[in-house]
Image (cartoon, rainbow, N blue to C red):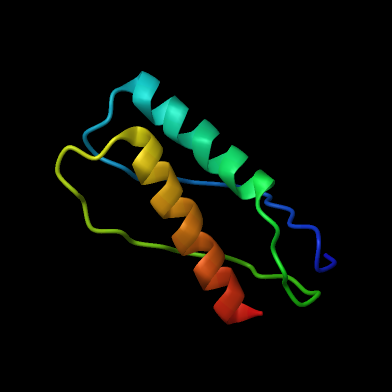
Length: 80
């Protein structure tokens, strides 16, 4: 993996309280959000990244996706 490329082999999300349609939309938005970002990482492999977020009442699926993307990139930045 070079500094401009991020390959994700598997993306798993555990989120309660969403309908099937909302869960599919969340997964799509997270995948797109990660794909659209520039990520500066050192070459190498990160076997797993885990993020845990506290729920926010009345949070939209789009806002949740953005939080997941931001936290994932922050964790990746700390592992580089």
